[in-house]
Image (cartoon, rainbow, N blue to C red; front, side):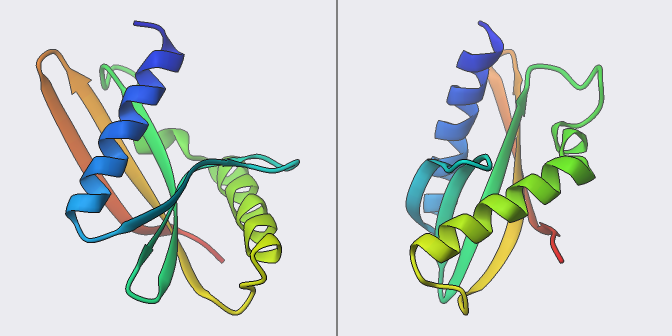
Amino acid sequence: MNHITTGEIGEAIAADFLERQGYKILVCRYRCKIGEIDIIAKRKNTLVFVEVKTRRTTAFGRPSEAVNLRKQQKIISTALCYLNEKRELSAACRFDIVEILLAGSRTECNHIVNAFGR
């Protein structure tokens, strides 16, 4: 399984997980000129921008550790594009990370709420 397939599987697992937690998935793989956001969801009155990180092993650390400051800034800028596009600049929003660990036949899902932001 290559890293693209691993990522796609992780995003599908994360979307299913979030739906089971009461989130409404609005967009998967939102793209603009600045970057991409894996999942944009809504829960109650809050827009949630979700970065999904999937790994098959923790040999190089937890999946969420790959969301460094530069990646966070890119996600925030991409979210601003979405908010501008949808004319929702005053919407309450937050940035979450969903870690997916595909360990053999076992799948681990860890949701980090409000993982980063301004």
